[in-house]
Length: 376
Ligand code: COD
Ligand code: ZN
Ligand code: ZN
Image 1 (cartoon, rainbow, N blue to C red):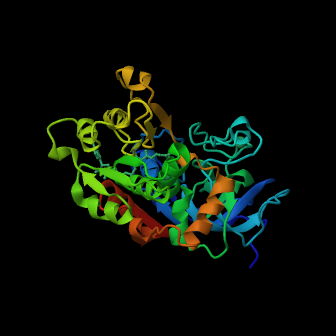
Image 2 (image 1 turned 120 degrees about the vertical axis):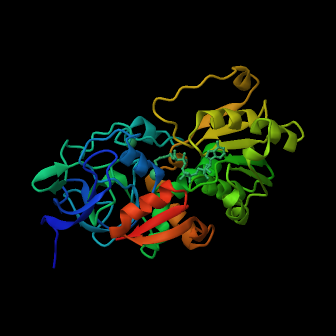
Image 3 (image 1 turned 180 degrees about the horizontal axis):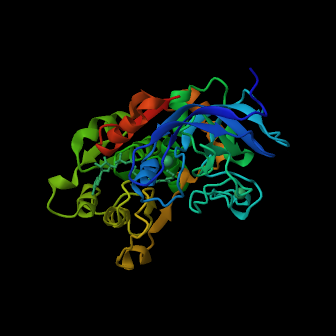
């Protein structure tokens, strides 16, 4: 039965209030308006930032459908859409690429002005929602909203990918994998033979390790409090792993000793803490080292540090979505996945049916998973 142009009734995970579980309910999804695309979601990963929506760290409007790391297939298109057609496989983009704003026109940048991730209006460009529950509007999240069987996104906010892309794996390219991998390959531009330190070996830190390895780093030191992630970090390319709990002195001093007082060429913080951001900065070479912030700090966080850390020549950079430009880079990464340039199997520890979404969040909070993927 053709659903184009009609309202679709389907299951979605709605968050009605902060610090509540998600409720799977039947919602109505309106047809896409001009320049919009309705997508049937096939698989969606659970990212730490979705939990930030649930626990209130990321401020949003309620009710809302979270989820931003997914792969789906185009069900129908609105007037004027030429980039995709029904049946195309797509990855929704929480950082759209409108192609017209200042960020999009700068080939080095990716924070498109059309991104709602930091504005939090929860609405489409025209200021309305395509979702409703019991006749009342439900908000969109981060230009994507993927914890639903069907979503509507602007055509700026989808990347068309290889039709043979495996949904449960390739969905990670929509956020976690690309965020970490790009921090190494695009933001830091890790060079062959260099030394790297990766703070935090979770779902984002491990892809940083993969990016450092792909870029040809000869030394990759993983830093994590618990040692349970050390074997997988080594499998993915870490040459050594250390826990700060094993030392009395600060971890940056340990790293300086491990590198004959030089410090590493590149360091990455994938924990989201200000103390480890400063430790990562202090661990890279004082003159030519580059440190990249990947973890999202709490919104109210502030930090105090010695200006000398920067004055001597270090570079301190932030990285959003690994500096990936969605429409250009996401299809390339999917092709690289399919050509086996990297393997996502080790970081997908759990695959659950959509109905078990709250269990997936428990696994994330208990540190029991690296990445959980929901099959719709
Ligand atoms: N020292 C060393 N290791 C630590 C410390 C510490 N003080 N504290 C925690 N850790 C370890 C934990 O044991 C854990 O293994 C790891 O650090 C963190 O991993 P996870 O699995 O808990 O978290 P991730 O990897 O899924 O995500 C962490 C981020 C901070 C990267 C994530 O929350 C984040 O901020 N993402 C935002 C990045 C981004 O660009 N987002 C865009 C949209 S999502
Ligand atoms: Zn994410
Ligand atoms: Zn733009």
